[in-house]
Image 1 (spheres, rainbow over the protein chains, first blue to last red):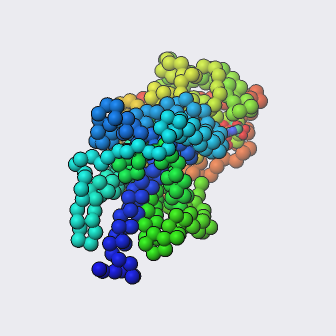
Image 2 (cartoon, rainbow over the protein chains, first blue to last red):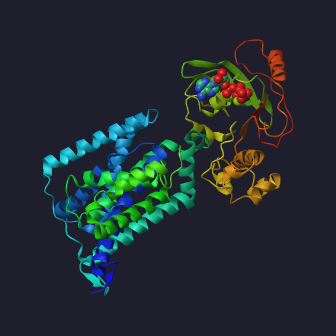
Length: 295
Length: 207
Ligand SMILES: Nc1ncnc2c1ncn2[C@@H]1O[C@H](COP(=O)(O)OP(=O)(O)OP(=O)(O)O)[C@@H](O)[C@H]1O
Ligand SMILES: [Mg+2]
């Protein structure tokens, strides 16, 4: 068997793959957080719960309506995004003039309520959700076995992240978003309905979380607390990348997933803490994050 | 001729501080009106009140026959009023071209891009630069150029010449204010007409 640095290549690539999968979820979730924070100035602590809701909507669609994975991929982000729009219109919008802290408290409280409700109803053991038939099986690449579904998750989330980046950085719509992030009053005084843009942006960020939830359903089981565990790591990713930077959140998401995977190979004891160690180091030397600008 | 803009008994507040006390003036089509007043008199606040950008305002502002005092600023802009703000408001995360194209067209009859580049040739050469990397004067050109595109019927330029020549002394401003404004409030008076492109009626401030 071939080895690299004394590690069997099978194990190395296996962990690299797991790292990329985790990185896909980190990237999608931190991207949503970055988009929301940019325009709303709110750290959306409900993000993990909304990710979980995405997975649950997929499960409901399959078990109550007979609609499979591909439907869920389209319907769940819209449904959970609409739920986000209601939250923004009824609650978040009252907080924009106040300190960040209030938005954080509100969204954190909402996360606890939502997770509590789902736990009451569905326990915490997790519901199964199977891989869609088109993506079952895998490829033998010679040096490793690549399950099709995992390859799909990596490719699709990378595509979603890059499209989002493209829209924000390179299109007219994106220029409104960037401008409104800097100076919402002036953009509004040019005739653009900024409050509506803020609402839709929140809906979009939440929709991204739900999309990640659907993609996660076949990998991890559908569980009321699936987001609560993940979101802690994602916040560390966001802190490392820098709040509000779009490309930064994508690169750090994937990058940290890979670093975490490699740590599992070379020094497994640290694999659960490596991200937090990196966070501490980054905070010491670049408090605004690797890609962030101080504000 | 009926006025394009009629400002009547306008009061405005920032939080508790009452800034405008019964502003009144008119702007007719094709007219240039200059608001004069010492620093802190309320010129910027007047323009922001017209644009719907101060938290609390009362009185009557009608534009082209429509009452705007209760409209949000995006709706006011769509009626055909555009503001070039005092601090210029060029966006750092947008390049020059994006900055120029940012304000949507609100009516026909705005200047074509070509025409704007003729007026401000510096802009054409810097289209891909970050907006805030332009010099102060170039940023002012950009801030004016972008609202010329929109076809707005009323252009409000807040202190547009600040970057272009010596600032008149505070004493000049105070004298002007005394001459025209007997009351201690920020009632900024006095229009004077000048030649402007047909259909454009700017209001400017320049202390
Ligand atoms: N955002 C604000 N909050 C509270 N008070 C403000 C605010 N902006 C302006 N003011 C106050 O309102 C008054 C009028 O200010 P304004 O900016 O309209 O003056 P101005 O005539 O434009 O002055 P300048 O010639 O210096 O530009 C000033 O006393 C100022 O201190
Ligand atoms: Mg001023």
